[in-house]
Length: 241
Image (cartoon, rainbow, N blue to C red; front, side, top):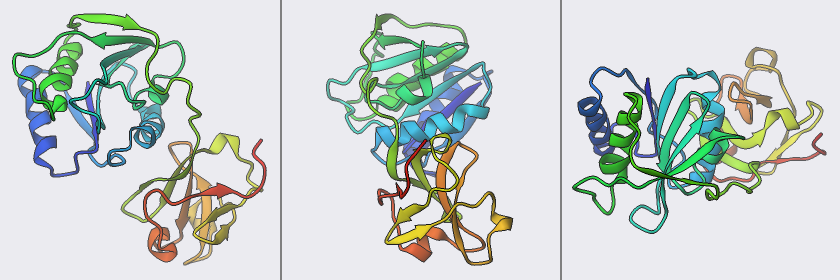
C-alpha cells in the first residue's frame, strides 16, 4: 500500500500531479490519501500529526510524505525504514516522530532526468515511493544524522484544526494527568473523556484517537468559540507526569 501525506491542500493540482505519478509508476499498488491538509509549511508540527495518524496504519506500507518548505535548497531527500514500513520525504524533521527509534535512515542519491527546483514531491519523492512499494530500492547512502532527531517532540500549540473545529495540539496525552487543565486563548479547560459526557455547548480537553491532547466542544466548534487559529499556544496548567 502507498499512503500519501502532504500539505498541498485537498483538491490542489499539486496533490493531483503527485498522485498521477504514483498511479503511473505503480498501477497495481493500492493508494490511499491520508491527508493533503497537513500543517502548512510546518514540518515539525506535520511530523507530530503524522506520527499520531500512523498508529492504526498497516505494517506493510510506504508513506509518501511531503511538507517541504526548503525544497530546492540543500536539505537531503530521505528514505526511512522502520520495520516493514517505509517513509519517503525531505530531511527537515518531518519523518523523525513517525520513524521512532531504531529506524534505518538513507539519503536518496538517485535523481530523475527532470527535477523541478520547486516540486520534488512529484519528480523525486513520488517515483521513489512508488518504486519502494514495488520492492525497488533506488541508489542511497546510509546516514545517522537526520534533522530533528534530538528535538523534543512535544509541541504546546495547536498544530491542526479538523472540520469539527477541534483543536489538536502536539502534546502527547500519555504524558498528561486527567486532573490537569488546559489553558488556551485565555480560557482554562478541564478534562473530559468523550463528547457525550460534556454538557451541550461546553468545552473540554481529551486524549484524541491519535494520542494527542485536543480541545473540543460538545456540538460546537472550539476553534470558533475561542477564536483560535493554527499556532495558538496550548499549555497544561498543572504538572505533567
